[in-house]
Image 1: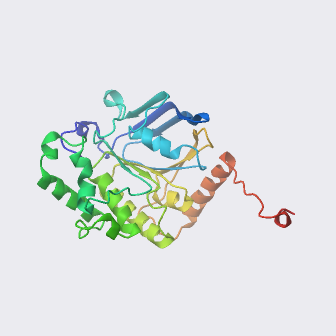
Image 2: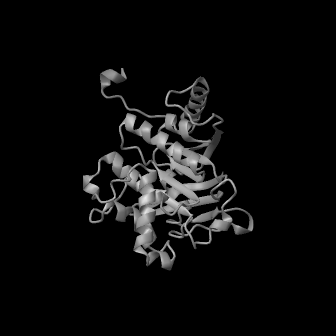
Image 3: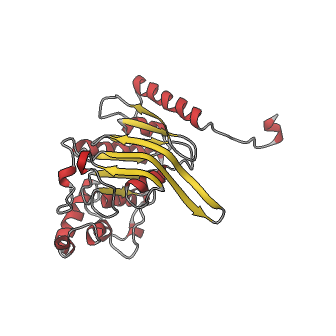
Amino acid sequence: MSRGTGHEAQASAEGGLAVRLDGVRHVFQGARGELVALDGLDLEVPAGSFTVVIGPNGCGKSTLLRLVAGLLAPAAGTVRLGGGEAAAAPRAGDGRVGLAFQQPRLLPWLTVLDNVALPLALAGAPAAERRAPAERRARAERALARVGLAHAGGLRPRELSGGMAQRAGLARALIGDPSVLLLDEPFSALDALTREAFDDELQRLWMERPRTVIMVTHSVPEAVRLADRIVVMTARPGSVAAVLPVRLPRPRPVQPTAEATEVDQGVRATLAEVGPTEVEAWSEEAAG
């Protein structure tokens, strides 16, 4: 965990912080008026758990992550990190939360090492750490090594493959050793085999260092393979339709077991209830 941020005392013995959202509503203002992204959302995420959020397009999954990260404030309701009297609203940059976006968003004029170290150079790190380039460099090198990029620190983002860039984005989210790690479809742009390898790597990292993980995905197999619990959201405005436990032993293989297939079918059935897929016919002949 980031030193000097004060969140160490709140982290549970299991690793990570509990996350709780009560009656959360979030509204975006646009040219056409208000868009209600979330409404009446209640969710408890146990400390140290791996929670995957899945639901129809536009149901507010990414908005939920940004609320937990403190990048957005709810229009109504509360978001709290930690338990008991130590529970507090998230504040962007305070070191408790790391967020990996769908796109790595690496700054092209910085090296990979400097991109990964960037959170430590900003407001989330103590002043002493911000003034210590050698310490930032050492921590960035350790973060890169954890995601298999130990020799890529001197490269520029344009020199990375898509998979390497995704790893760099994950290293940047992990550098502060946050108690809560938020992942917004971080592997969606990868091909199927590379994505499976990344899922393996993510599962390994979490087993080595348990922390609270909330991950958004559209892939049911990925959710079943990674999650302790799967949160199925309703169509917009989003709320929680169901929380499905995944009681499968780890590490979980790529090829699904009979038990995993049963969980998979349960998730799909719940998704079909909350947001049936609508596909228009390609032609009048197909419709007939």
